[in-house]
Image (cartoon, rainbow, N blue to C red; front, side, top):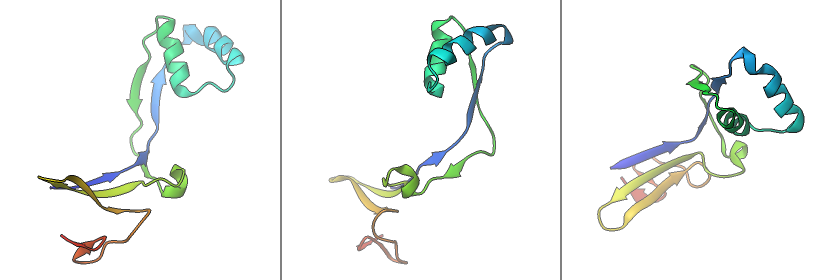
Amino acid sequence: MIHIDQKFTIWERFSIEDENKEALESFLKENPKASGLEIYDWAHEQGLDPQCEILQDTQESLEPQDNGGENTLEIIIEEPVAGQTLLHSNNSCLPTDFSLCGRDI
C-alpha cells in the first residue's frame, strides 16, 4: 500500500455566547498573546461549551517554507517486512514516471 500524506492549513471556528463577552475581554487583556487553543481551554475552565466547526473551503496546501522547512508532502510505501519506507517528500527528490527516490513502484 502506498500512502500519500499531505499537510494543510484550515480555519476552525468556535463560538462563545454573547453573555461571556466581558469575561473574554478580561481574559484577553491579561493574556494578549493567547492562542486559539488557550482561549478554547479558558472557555472550558469557565464551564462554557464552545462549539467547534471547520470553515468550509478554507483548506490550503502548505509548502515546506511555510512549515519551518519540514516536509508537507510525503509518499510512503508500507512494506510487510521493513515497515514503512519514505519514497518521496517535497523536501527531497522528485518522483519520475517509474520510480520514486530511485525505487521502482
